Length: 343
Image (cartoon, rainbow, N blue to C red):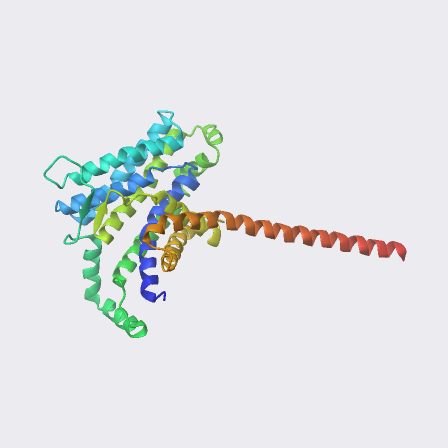
């Protein structure tokens, strides 16, 4: 049975991953750049945050530096493409491969040896979530909500309401900041670069700089999501970014298919909603008896395929209905005209 607890946990994770989905949206939809750096920069954010927290630094400072590391990684991809004249797809793949070793080295800073480290536990470390959770518990609201749902569902929530509230505020702030940025002069130039580079160059815009900036911001958001996921899950692992680009694309595609893309405000909202819906769908799928956690990537691929195919099939059916309606109207008009001629 799919309980409220499972839904709550899916929504909680979906909100955190929504930041990563917004970063993917900026690169794939706004810049029209197939950036595979995401699989590496997600881990970079987690590695930097976990390493600094373990070394005793503030979670706030650790998270900010994780964003900076992701921004640098994105800019490096942009430089490979614009200045190195390397294919966009290959630039992302090269940076993703390079980041694997870099991330091992970053996490290796917490050990006595110079060898890279594949994971860092944060079980006894103070994170942003433990800080905010302690602050939230002082209000007493959390106990009341948990008590209410405990009576309603005979179980407790998997996490505090404070985490959801905190992450929702963070995601909405990023969403509104992205909405504002994409309507500024630089943001409009970024959108124009993704639509038609030749046209924007004719207005003396430096498309190379815009691509580098856009990829930097995109991977900065991805790294922020990685840093928050590491603090939420209480560990950072070298393999936690595998397939992250597919998850981001799934969130974008699902959100756009359900909520539409008529405006920037609506599209960014759709991306956030898509990330949450994706997590709920995956949780539902994993409750099917013949599926287990090892099938998660297969489930993700299936969801993306459905999200890509279904809108086209629906539009095809609508077009058939429109054609049938126009045909019926023409036949009706011809019949009326023939009747008038007979009279």
